[in-house]
Length: 161
Picture 1 (cartoon, rainbow, N blue to C red):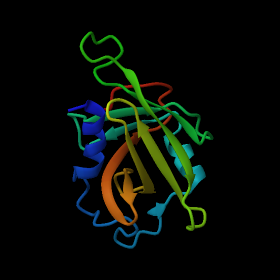
Picture 2 (picture 1 turned 45 degrees about the vertical axis):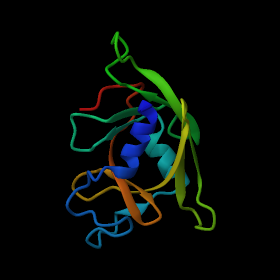
Picture 3 (picture 1 turned 60 degrees about the vertical axis):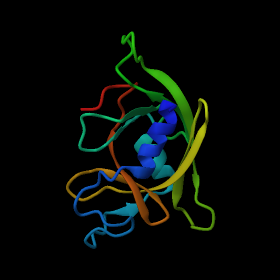
């Protein structure tokens, strides 16, 4: 099975959320847990590493988003085993675009395009941060798909920690 399809499938199938997370849009009534706008998603993910599962290691995904914090698009670089690994080195695996969700005001979404055979596309709204953890929920509508740990402003692909 192609690794990127497997990675993308992890976003759809993994249930690695904190005990407080039942659905996107509500966590114990905490008013700081909100659906992010287009600009807030760009600020959160641009130049940052996204780590899944949040409780790793082991890490299934260690994806660096190349855009600046103000950029609405960029490439996805998978850290894998690191740039010097002879068996699974760091490499570009796709791209992303951040947009405003159609018909939902200023709410944003991030769309991923993973290259390879077969290519895969996924779009998520982003909610957060989760109280006490700082993780962010990637959602399909109000259905939680996966919680993501974000390492902000790493400057390049790094190993999640």
